[in-house]
View 1 (cartoon, rainbow, N blue to C red):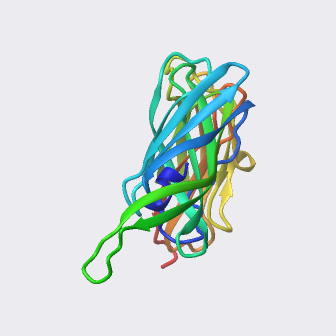
View 2 (view 1 turned 45 degrees about the vertical axis):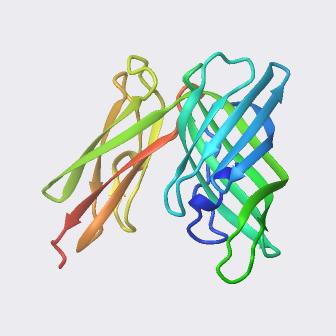
Length: 255
């Protein structure tokens, strides 16, 4: 969706969001751009054996994420306001751009995570420039533009982590929530990462309880001094999409 293209670019060549496939990845649906009315708005048509659909995207500036709305083939409801980030991969000529972008969100028809990407070349043309004091009327021509939706069977989750320091160690607890249906509790494993030299209980892994929670202990490195970040990575399953949470702890014993 190049529509969000320039509006979200911070640095040329920097891809702001790399969306990786989660557990339960399934079929894909792809489409092509039908029109772009400005740097920040593009429209796509989607086609599959299930029928046709559409996707529209809107950007808001160079440092602010845009949003995408879409209706996949065969669906009855529109999914709106999914965050969309882009960057310019390269500049070809004076006004021809190659734009790439990524998004991830929950489809309102199924509750399942949908993630995807776009890849578009487009040309900006100035009309009516009259020299000194003149201005341009711009048109936007798509040389090629595609969008791809990856459909999963997994519901979106969030992971929260909290820790309390005690004598010689830190005790932490975490919770993984289902963002689509809170009564359907996530299952699976969580892996922990932290500063070099620190040690986690159970080799840095835990299995979620029936309540979607688990706990662990962390022993900091010898003579710690400063702020240390602990990260809990929920690995996901075929039914629940991966997520992560973190917390920062200050250790001053070695200062």
